[in-house]
Image (tube, rainbow, N blue to C red; front, side):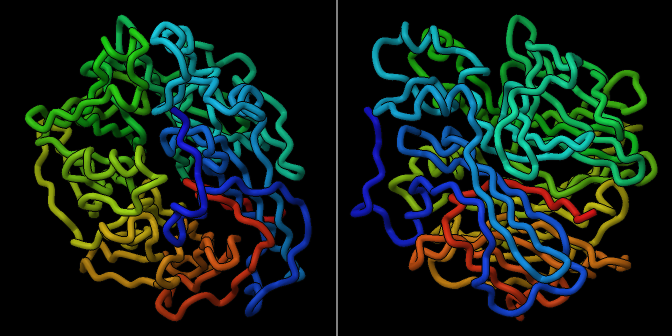
Length: 473
């Protein structure tokens, strides 16, 4: 049965789930001034067309571009990615594609025949640049190439044939600022369950580094990179194969969390060789903040949930529930590559948060500040834009106001600046009163002071997951 969004059942900010319009026009409604030196484009993507989706991950991807000119002018563009899924369901009244948490109508046999990452790919989770190409990414399947100026869909992209059709390309690439390389992975399910690891050089050429065996058909959303390792924390959340393979359950509904089993930390050497495997008590994470090498140890910072159910129910019931279970908090783990054991793990801060990240220039080195969206159980995704000091555990945040959900904020360094807070945080905040989005610019040194600039976009950009900043050239 299709769950359609009706305005009468949407509490406050949940009108963000209405399907936005596509636009391409200058923006003149600006509070404050665009800071001198902030010149470039904030690209974001999210599941913006959700009328047929039974899970938040199954909304069709819309890419937005908010361009800040050197002259202080601002331009906004939004456009849906013309994936196979988007085109198949454009005028449909029932789901036509089996997604992460959505089944098509009819018999299990019909759903069994719909198992295809190519058909399900909603291109709604992240965007990246490589070799001058803008790509929209999903959990699986191949990237979709987007024109960075017009946002028109160019088509699926397989890195000039280097990415085999059987190899998925996940939504969480990570960049090494020291080498300019980008790393990513894909979860490969089948007779052998593996994680495929990729390296992309400065020119955009992709190489498959390794395929590493994993403990069963697990779900894994993200990983992280140090100077020597690709770091995977494989939580004990496994797919129940029978209901999935017989078409009786979508992928997300077939997942089962096993708290009595271990989280397996897998360190894959960037230079080649055998991976290091370490077991630790179970937890669940979607996102990492960063990681770094410390002698023979690997230090990992991530947003840890006690269990998958704390967030899984919200992603499924997003149209009717605005609250989370217990939110994730920032944890630090230290793993010894010599003794092959988890030396320690502790909670850095009790503050609930998601979408953590650091200044990208320090991503594989030493960093002190983690930026994130601060969340609590009642407000759900309607959180604050905040910062955690890893050395002290102290926090600072800006609250956009009751019922105004803020997106992940991207740190943009000030030209010539070197400190981790010498720059701006650029984010989206949805305003339910206007049913449109504000692009906000915060001084990273003083978040509590609020935006130095608020751009009132003429349309909603929907609920966005991730984004990237592209400096003007």
